[in-house]
Amino acid sequence: ASLLLATGAPLSMVVEQAHAAVQAADKGGDAAKKAADDKANAVKATAQAKVKADKAAAAAGKKAAADKAKAEKAAEKAKAKADKATADAAKKAAKDMAKAEKAAAQARAKAEKVAADAAKKAAQDKARADKAQQRKPPANNKKP
Image (cartoon, rainbow, N blue to C red; front, top):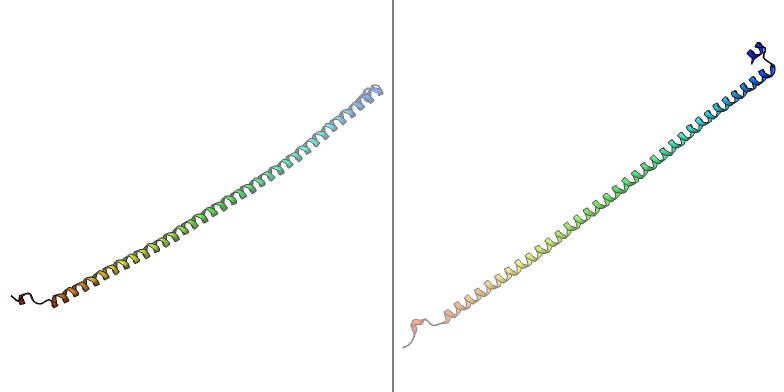
């Protein structure tokens, strides 16, 4: 504008030029302001997205930890069940073995008693036979 004045251009033309320059500067300023706002919005959106992502990752981590804890608890329960079943089976086997041993001892005692009774009876029978033999008169003392 000062160049136009120096060259002797009419004042109205100088004013128009200055006005156009001001408008262009305003437009440029508006564009710069819009770009700055857009950048600020983008930064804000990025920060929000990061916070959301961090929250989601934390939630996923929490869920994974909860799932792991659940799985460990289930494994412990299964182990406890297996241990109990093993203990119960061992207990039952011991009980059954004791029963079998008792039955075997009873059978042995019965067999020994039967054998003792048989031996006693055989001894009694032999004693009777011996006694009867002694009472019999000798065979060569027969009278004619």
